[in-house]
Image (cartoon, rainbow, N blue to C red; front, side):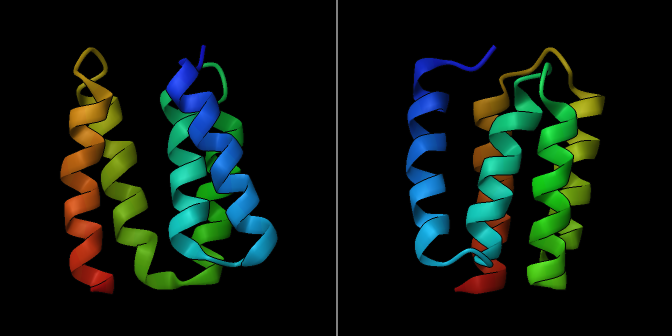
Amino acid sequence: MKTQRGEEAEKYYKKALQINPKDPITLLNIGSIYFADKTSEDEGLKYFCKAIVADSAVESVVHQKIHIWSYYPNKDIQKLNELIDKELRKIYL
């Protein structure tokens, strides 16, 4: 079940997709929201795939996220996401 913050973030990311539907970071972030939800992992994977199609450079980040979530299922997903996002910024900044 998504948190209130997750629902709000999803809303704004989807608005961002209306402006730029192929933005890999936005697609990756929406995928992360769904994947972390545990009940929407399939939907999350769809967005991860769209992010990879938009920019293949994010493929390694997607693999990292999935690996970490499966390896640390009881850990704080927010903290794990922050670590991965830090690495993602290195790719794009």
